[in-house]
Image 1 (cartoon, one colour):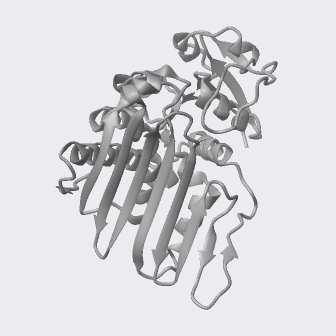
Image 2 (cartoon, helix red, strand yellow):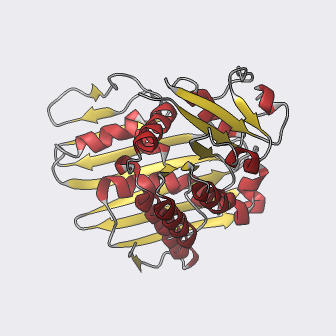
Length: 337
């Protein structure tokens, strides 16, 4: 298997997380792009986020470094880029990289709106290069267990997904709606994408909640209506130092799966059976698996079927539809993605 060189653009919380994961992937050469000279030395001590996935100091001695994106694009040894930038920058940076002949992994949400996502997909098609959005939840073992369970679950009865945290104290751009799309859009895009991944598109949606970004509040309680069942997605930004958490409960004909991030693994409950912890075999790091999958697709110029650009674009569309319903005090809206 030939080696590839991947350039990670941006060394904030998510960029640092991606670097740490990518360093463990065999036959992958790394480059990084940052305007911060200390970060280019591997000093990530000022990087913080809502998951403890980074280290203060990484060994960048074997990593090529760039201070500008254009400098990177001019380097013919760079095969692909991993864009860990504010959401508003995803489209312009992705389309420029694709036009320069680079494959592109772009952080979630894929773009600020559906039109931006569609332009990115068009640019990838025109350049004959791989484009993938980093919807990492699809690679988390806990959530992957849901995908496997659906093959034997019988009829779905109901599902609930929840994701909550404090308004971020890192990355000031996140609190700027023109840069991030807002807290609900940036945070719950994970669970919105997971609903599409597991169940497809709902026929209608409704949502309530409240946005008050200056006071650290951006919350949503949404119902996605399918034939015979409803999926509830709830959460967002809460006051003060509210701790990060993510969880789900899926009730189906043949069992219930429950998970909370305070526990390592989901639990399967079935009638007349003892509870069963669902342990991954082998254990895996979702960020590593996500990047390795993208690299394999790029190396073979193979479309990323596990996480298609279209599905990531549809998640953006659905997120905006839920926010529209919230703005209309919970009005039920038809869903056409």
